Image (cartoon, rainbow, N blue to C red; front, side):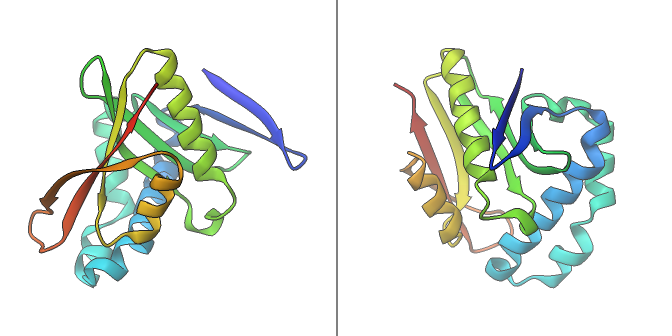
Length: 172
């Protein structure tokens, strides 16, 4: 499954991730997490010591099944990722969704999430869920703008006082 389109005169594709993409995936996730979560948690040790590209690279390399369901935005440079994992036959959970911080605001996240929604709709999935940090207002607004609703389910993120909120998108 590959979507190839032209936007603003430039060709891009949304495609499945493969092993060769692991270094770039690790970069996008680590830098995306640092930019999004450092202001929320204010924990430099975690952001810059524990959260390392090489550690995430090794984890993906040793667990290639983590790439199952991962889609990439690629216009010659992989600029964003989204990963939807089946919870059961009717529900997909978005486990990773990051756009390279340098390219945020260019519509890449919208293209990825809309493509994922369309693909799971074709598979007969009824619901997409994801967890987002309550204090991550920018992400919550993005999800709400794309049809996700706060389900009211929450949990405390282990080792912190921060709350995670479950968002749902019900497919019609």
